[in-house]
Structures are given as C-alpha cells and as structure tokens.
Length: 306
Image (tube, rainbow, N blue to C red):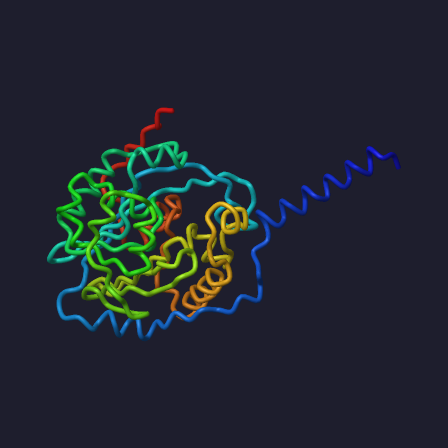
C-alpha cells in the first residue's frame, strides 16, 4: 500500500471519528435520570386559587433550516426547520407569555433566513396585555424580544426572573437588563398562576426551567425549553449534538440527558401529557389540531436581507 493510500485512509478514519463524535454520539449513556415529579407538579397546579387557562396559541417569529443531527444527535444530516416560537397562554384575566422571540437584528446575526414582523408585533401585544411573562431559559432567541422591546418599561414588571435567569440576561449586555425586576427565588416546583407551574431544570443553561400548563378542560402541557429543541430529542431521548453542546453553546450535557430521561419516564407514565419542544414548528403544525393548541394568525415569514 502506498504512502498516499495510507494517508488517505488515516484521514478518512479521522474524519469519520470526528463526524461520529460531534454529530452522532448521544452519550454519555450512563447519565443518571433526573426526576420530574408529575404528582407534585399537578398538586402545585391546584395550589393557587382562580380560574385556569382556557387555551394555548403560538406564533413563529423566525426560522432557519439546520441539519437534524445538530439539534438531535444521530438523527442524520437531513435539513429540518428550526423556529423561534413564542407561546400565549390564554387566561380569563390577562394572558401569560412563554418566551419572547428575538429582534430582527439578532435574527440576522444568528443566520435565521426568515423573520415575521407581524408575529413580532403580535408578541409585543401579548406582552403588553399579559399578566405574566415567563421564560424557558436565558438565551437571546428566548428573551431578546422582551429585553429589546421598545416599550420595555410597560412589560418589565410582568416577568418572573430567577437569579440564574437574571444573571444570564445581564450577560447579554442589553441596556434593559439593568431594569429587570428583582430576581425571584423559586422552589424546584412552584406555581406562579392557577394551572401554571415552573420547574427548575438546569442543564442546557443554569437558568433553564420547564413550564407546566393545565387548561380548564383538563389538557396538560409541559414546555421542555431547549432541553428538547426538537420532538426527536424527547421521543428518541437524544440530546443536541456535541458540536453544539461542547463547542458552540456549551451546556451541562449530563444534566440535559438526565432531564431527557425524566421526560421519557413522564411519557411512559402518562401519554396524555403533551411535551412541547422549543424549536420544532413542523411538529407543532402536525400536532396542534389533535392536541388542542392553535397557531395565532397566518405566518408571514419574509426573507432577511443580507
């Protein structure tokens, strides 16, 4: 065998090993599961007096296509759509907003290919009329629409921000981060409104939390945040790729896998509990009609000028 052939084989082996490690490997397999106590979550959902939410709706502020394996290790390089999604929990006395999207400028910086100005305006209206604003974690595509909102003074006091969320938001170097409401220390599982419970799940970030919502009609939803960016993270119990979690957006991979195992246990415990991924618009489009939530308005995603 020639030296060239040997060198070529070595190069291909190294490339294959790198591809496997960065985009296929879903370990460590021995990551211990993290418990999500559904009984306690449901108890907390009944802890505060008042009427529970009546409906769920969402809007997609920005989209881009990414290789599936980037957001769900080992699922292949087929391109999937990733969306910046904001939720509106409809309540009898002012709604609750989950996450807030991001500005057009940030969407360009993060290489999103489409941005919906109508959706961003709708999110602003939701925040102005909301009773509460909550976040699954502190990354810019989840808190940017709030921090950069032109009428920030009118919405800032509505946000529930834990100390870890506050630190993460402050690190984004937004002028409005200095005007955040005082951080609120939260129990591991704590109700913030009738039927709405925050669950502390640090891993993807230190401030990550899942959000449980129970409607008046009994339907139950758990917003997974970026612990489960795509439905495949939850269904197949696989984290994001190491390319993301070890290099581009570092996270506690062991903890995140543990929470994914906890979500898998919840799905086996009660299949009627709807676990909602954070960035999977195609899954939401397919699931909404049967799972009791709707898209708000019609999407008007426009290409971003480069």
